[in-house]
Image (cartoon, rainbow, N blue to C red; front, side):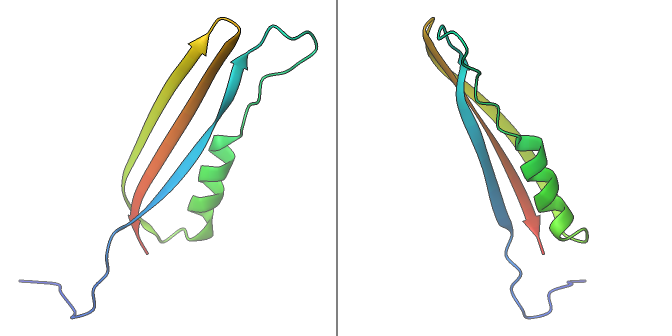
Length: 80
């Protein structure tokens, strides 16, 4: 038995990215620390009935001792 109603309901994906320097030799500087958790929680709270199918997280890092950077990406696959 099929539950197809004749109206397409495609899956959607939301991307969250944040990053920046995580270590610096500059006195008095602070690394940029984006609040990725807050962004994801706000998205999820917008529609509590949203059907979440998959969440994936990835982190990359590049640079050397004086300019080390990191970026984290979270993808959420869902249907409204």
